[in-house]
Length: 245
Image 1: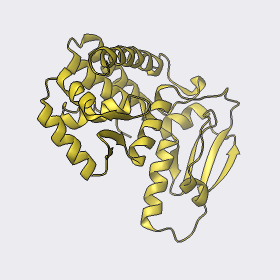
Image 2 (image 1 turned 180 degrees about the horizontal axis):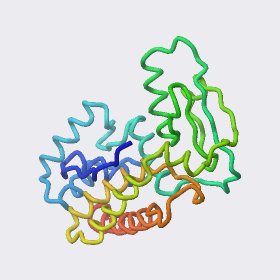
Image 3 (image 1 turned 90 degrees about the vertical axis):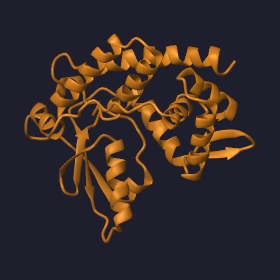
């Protein structure tokens, strides 16, 4: 397994529009508000409006009477992001969820959808057709998973700490999380904070959210979530006073 490098993406009109809509509930805003959001980052009105047109054409947004809203695919992404920020967990009793693929003659589209769904459910692949994780998360299973898999619960005979370390690159994830924490603490400008916070949120989507018993010492996940929540509160306040007022 390899560690994840910092996923820092350049600030663009599309990223500003997308991040703004992903951060509001419901994710639906008029064009003038999205233009104001672009202005916060020095992006011209015409550039934002071109981005909006292209995002509608590509199926990222839908437009209705001057309002722009996320499509179903991006609504699912917003739900995953919300869950990664505040995951629903339960006390772990030592059992693991095991998903075994039992469907036959699956087309390529179903295989791809299953792999994406299992990643969203934070399963790791033990071997082809067998996925597992500790049973400490509360979340629904998408239909594509239910149709293709049979689910079991069990307790591994092997050391669960060693098993978790073999399934997830915990050291790599932690190193990238600490680098993001350091960069966010040093960030001085709004665009820099915005770009780094977006990278932090993408990184949280890759957090396996394991029980504390299976994690290395001084796991940085809670600190990264806490710092992201502080940024999100500051950005919501900025949107309220400078964009949505």
